[in-house]
Image (tube, rainbow, N blue to C red; front, side, top):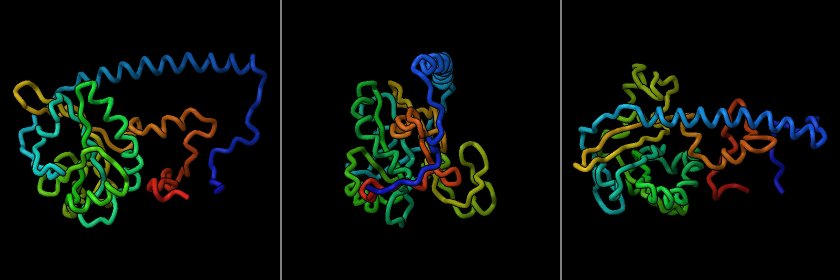
Length: 242
């Protein structure tokens, strides 16, 4: 068994009788319930955001050929797009995005029951995406935006010019890291006239809630137990763990 490095040690942790633990647990439960109510309010505020009509036509390349953004809804009224870091010429997709993507196929089955489709989009050509997708064993729809400005318009890809000039925007602020691809998630709605609206986008830590593994770890004694200087340096492709 491989010994894993740990940052959140449990040595010397306070141990108490059951009655005292129960009192502490009930006290925390009050705060958890308050947080749940606040989360419900935040979710409602997210739904109340105004929409932006998508006026540009984006043509993606997928396993079924060319598809527009409206086509990606697959007869549903809602579409979630995960912006996967996979640039042209890369040998593999981002390992951290891959960590997130490992959770998508199971969720997609249930999303369809709530009038929602999940698709993944990257700037790499389809010919580079498909071998990696096959290797990872994923079934979700993954499309290339290589011949459109989709990634640039949604601020997850950046030109050398924008990076050099300091004009690159990521997570609603100036990007302070010289990197040409970033991760994110965007939501869209299609009405009865087939008009498409951008309703929401989130980036960086904002996509944490899509990662079920992290949600499980947050319940444990050691939590995520990550290197504070480089939190995801432990992450590997699922076929590369020892």
